[in-house]
Image 1 (spheres, helix red, strand yellow):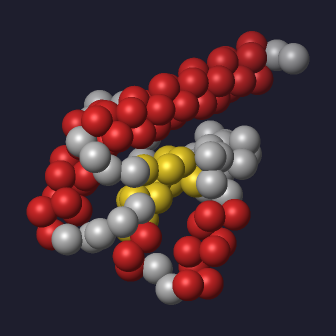
Image 2 (image 1 turned 90 degrees about the vertical axis):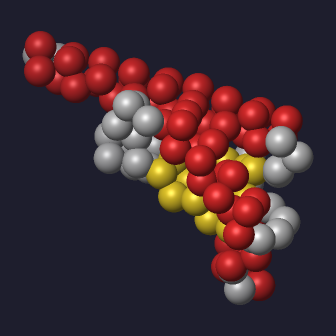
Length: 106
């Protein structure tokens, strides 16, 4: 392995660890606010890559005040990390879409 490969691997590992740590804090802080959030997608499936984003599934109501609270929480945790994310609200999904998301649930 050359130096460039080693550096690329080191950065990818650091990005993965940052994603895991950030997502875990989001889930815990959301729980403290009474909101159930699950990690789904590539991070849940252990296939997170260099350009992956963090996918979060928000369970329950998508009432405007609740949606805004979750959006603020996630933005605060990920600000400055350079990690993109997708917030998926269970209430916005079709039954089939929800089944697909729950298949990846962590």
